Image (cartoon, rainbow, N blue to C red; front, side, top):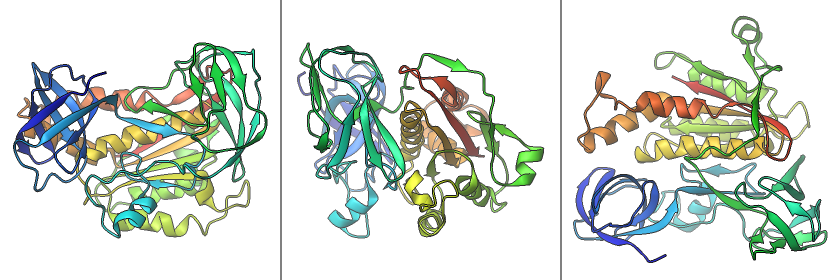
Length: 386
């Protein structure tokens, strides 16, 4: 596909208007300016694209290039995500620190997963087998978990070749279909699109938070959606952190969406020291942190929530029960309000955009107990602070 390159026409904080973008698609990822800032197209009008930029736009000038990648904002799903801490667009913060120091440099590009680490892969299929979306190709041990390697959901066919048991990196080809499609230990998936499943199941098991007052008075089912409402300083974050520590989910995805940096630091300091009662390992080994603190660009708050639920759905498709902590959805709504006002959209109640309720509903709808495409049963339980 040919490269679509436009020019910056207008800049209003995290919102950038680019012209000469004919052929670009909604929600495509773009690189903005000479520093190649990461952005996403959120509106199209003729050859004009409205872009929300996930990095600081200070210093960006009119006339700088805007290049479309022709791909939606996606995350890389595979072994190596557990015990990780990412920013809102799945860039590992430890790798960013190695590359740019204590402050995040603009336009920095780092791989989401470790490209050099070798994983011991045990195949479950062989050449000649028919596979379909989310088929389990094999397993990789990751801490105390059995990480199941899945076929990308949209890929199906007959295996022309497949590797034997051995050590492989995530970039190695482990199999090839007869149509030439190559398979790896990892694959990409767009964050705004819910991962497909066979059917939703009726929830039947309780989600035990580890706090009796919640389990007795405000019970939650495994695969349910819940909110923790309260004013500033009332203990929403502390409650969510307690649920993340002691809840009976297999895997925890903790999204700090516009939260204070010291609260994410508390999680980083405490979780490695706490013991998982199921395995005896540090809690951090079953946790993925997505840190998009209040001093980071507001546009990335929306991306961080979608990134978190996509990672949760990936582990759900392996048959695990996942809990997703979104702290806080109110700050996501505030980010939507700011970007909406920058784009001069008609406001609704209290200045929020009219589509806020639709975005929230689509997010919470991704919770649930499902039968996956491979026949497994997994769940995503969403707990959002409001």
